[in-house]
Image 1 (spheres, rainbow, N blue to C red):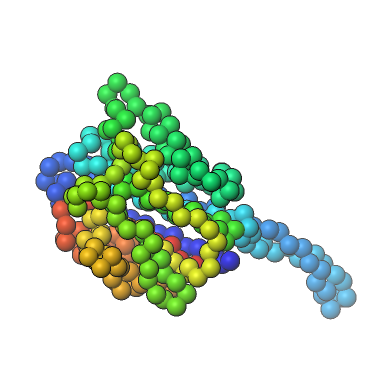
Image 2: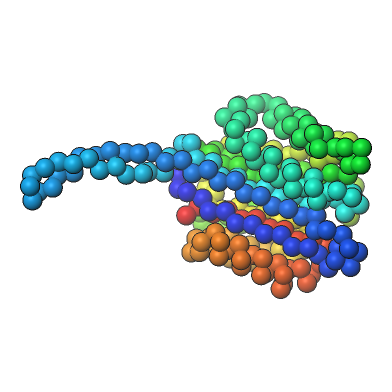
Length: 271
């Protein structure tokens, strides 16, 4: 397995600016590249001596790559805090427990228990559990295996090795198109959709909140636009830092103009 590059960005929506509400979208990435030190003998023919050369080789078996995104509930006062906390905590937890979670037949319940515990840890007399509501989308990869999770709306897409796009997790809006499920919903344990397995044909992934979804996803056809291919492939030719600048510029200048909502997007690609 090759190394992965990851980039993400988010921006406040015009509707939130008008109402003096903070940006409630958040993204987080967690990359832990491990390296092996390999020693080899190399002869220096000029004086016929042999010296030891040390070379660092990427250890794909133990390297971890994670990307998460959350859209805080607009009606909840501290949903920006909940979104920021849970995007970080979920990847840190999966990184430490990845191998056990891959074997866990009840992984959705294990992860929702963890999410509930972490959100409860920051509740106070002024901040209730419900105040921290958000959607949650994440992808975690280790040793050519993946864990993907999704609560609520937003979209997760995959780019395969033939440059074809596939929607692998569509928005969960419940009974009404303008409603969704959150990390604090009564039935959230049943609404966390989990995919896990071995990477075979994947070349890249994209996560987006419902603000970006309005521009890059066709709800009727349940399909992603070809623009997503271009965006994911930015990571093939550019650094993560440069791609994050490009993502922010596109959110600011194009995608945010199509909605009053906050916008967030995250991508990852094999290099």
